[in-house]
Image (cartoon, rainbow, N blue to C red; front, side, top):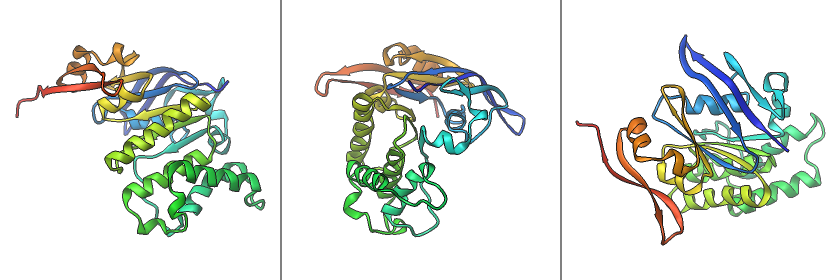
Length: 263
C-alpha cells in the first residue's frame, strides 16, 4: 500500500509564508483536487510532494518515511509529475520524451529493456501520441506536447501521479480525454492522482475529495459536496456559485452565477 502525507508542512519564499502548517493524508487510489486562489501555495505544495522543493518545517511522508531521507531517483519510481509548463529546449522526438519516464528504473549503461519498450508503447497508445511518435517535440502544438508529457508520466508506472493544471494547453475534447484516462487509471489500476486546478467544475466532476487552500492554510478538505458549498466558494473565490448534479452526464458540476467583485 502506497501512502503520501504531509505533517505540519511549512514553506517560505524570501521569508514570506507560502504554506503554513499543511496536514494532508492522501488516500491510495483516490483522485484529490487542490483548489485555491492564485498565490495560495497550490503549486508549491505539489512541488513539495515530489521532492522538487524541501519543506522549511514539518515533513512529507512517503510510505511512512520522511521524503528528505529518500533519493529523488527512488521518489521518481513511485511519484510522477505532469508540470504546468511543458517547455522542452531540445528537439527530442515524442518517443524519446516518453522513454524518459523509464529513466529512474535504468542503470547508467543499461539502456531500455524489452519491458521498458513495451511500457513506452503502451503509454503512447493510451494517450494517443503513438500516431506521431517520431515527430519532433518542438514542431508540435502546446496541446500535443502536453499529451506527450502525460504519456511520459504514465510510462513511469507510478503509484502516485501529480498534475499541475494538466488541461491548461489542451483543447476541450482533449481535456476530457486526458482526465477520463487518469480517472480510469485511478479506478481500475489503483493509481493515486493529485490535481491542482482553477477549474471548479472539472474538480467537482472528477475528484473524490478536494483540498481547498486559503491564505496558505487548509481551508477545508472533504468530498466535493462537503467542500464546494456556496459559503466556501464565496469566502475563498469571491463568487456566487453552487454545486449541482447534472443529470444529463450523471456527474457533479459547479454553476457560477456571478463574481462578487465590483469593478
